[in-house]
Image (cartoon, rainbow, N blue to C red; front, top):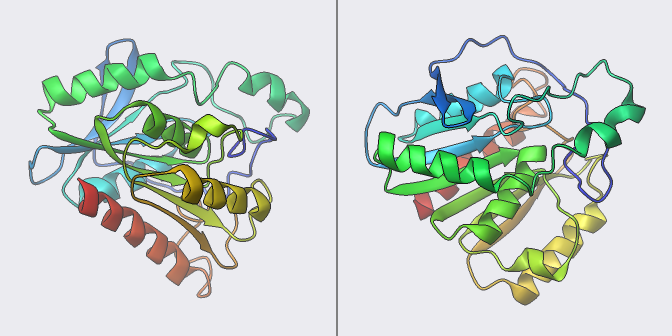
Length: 245
C-alpha cells in the first residue's frame, strides 16, 4: 500500500534471507529493531516498514546498510503488534485490513521513538526513511516534525490535499516508472504542487523501467538491467541523509 488514494496490496517481490546485524528492543509501547553505527556521531535514522511489517528481512537489510554509513538505525513496529499483510491473503480484504493501519496515525509511535533516540542513543540529528506504506508515513512525518531534519520517502503517496506540500525539512521522493500502484500522473501532481508550495529543499526522482519495491524488495543480482538503478537509488538515499544530517 504505497498509494493512500487507492489502497491495494503490493507484491512482496524478493524476500531476502537475512538475519540482521542489530537487535530487538522495547521502545515504550512498541518493539523495534536497532543497529548501532560503528562510528557514534550523534546521528540516527528511523526506518519505516512497508505493509509486510517491521520484521521483513529486506527492511532490516536496508537499515543495516544505512547504519554502515554512520547512522544508528531503528525499525519500529509501527503496526504496534497488529499483523502485517500476508502476501497469501485475499486481496479483497486489504481495504478493511488497512483501516487500522493509517500511515498518518503514527504520532504516538514517532514521539516514543524520538524520545528513545535522544535519551538512549544520544542522537542529536535525526532523519527518516520509509518504503511503500512507510514512504507515505515519512511524508506525514516530514509535514509534522521539524526536529526530523531529513526524510526519504520511497514509493509512497498520500492523499492529495493542499496541506501535504508544506514540508518542514528536506525530503527526497523516490518513485519507479513502471509502478502499478502509483501512476506517474500522481507523481507529476506531487512534483507540481511541491514546486508551487514547498519552501525547503526537496527532490522527486523517478527511475526508468523500475517497478514498485525495486529499492528494497528486488535482489541486486536479479538482472543486469536493474542492478544500476537499485544501486543508484540506494546511493541517492545515503547521499541525501549525508547532505542534510
